[in-house]
Length: 66
Image 1 (tube, helix red, strand yellow):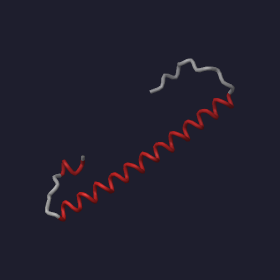
Image 2 (cartoon, helix red, strand yellow):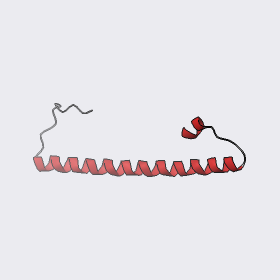
Image 3 (tube, helix red, strand yellow):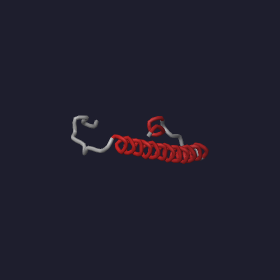
Image 4 (cartoon, one colour):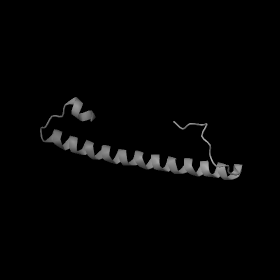
């Protein structure tokens, strides 16, 4: 975690607020993109697993969760 006792450069309050708001906005957008990427990968995994099952290949529970 961030040590809250660090000495940050002194900025006017309005600039510091804008900086933190911009940082939070950027990080939220990055997190949303990562979630979207994980969902896409999961969709591909499920499609491959379904086809393997159709071909008679059984996937064990431990492999399925990886």
